[in-house]
Length: 124
Image (cartoon, rainbow, N blue to C red; front, top):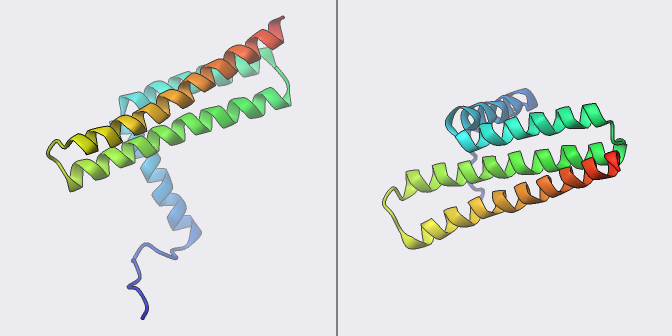
């Protein structure tokens, strides 16, 4: 037996791209931590443009920026979903939210370390 099809499945690529862009706009508007990470990303990109560290360092910079921002969005999506489905406080839900925030923190720390290594290798 076939499963019921979602109205959002198999939409044209342009429509799906619009949904993704809307998600980015929503998170950027609602989440201060995303905007903060975005400001750090702009600063890191400016440092990369100023220092011209080479293609490999630039690739690492882009990857770390994308990873941190993507994890911020996953964290926000998880919080939106949990808050809608289970608005009251529950211990395990708190643990899930903490784990998602920890993933962002871990990626942010790695990104900062990679940035420091890039600066050191370029200036030394």
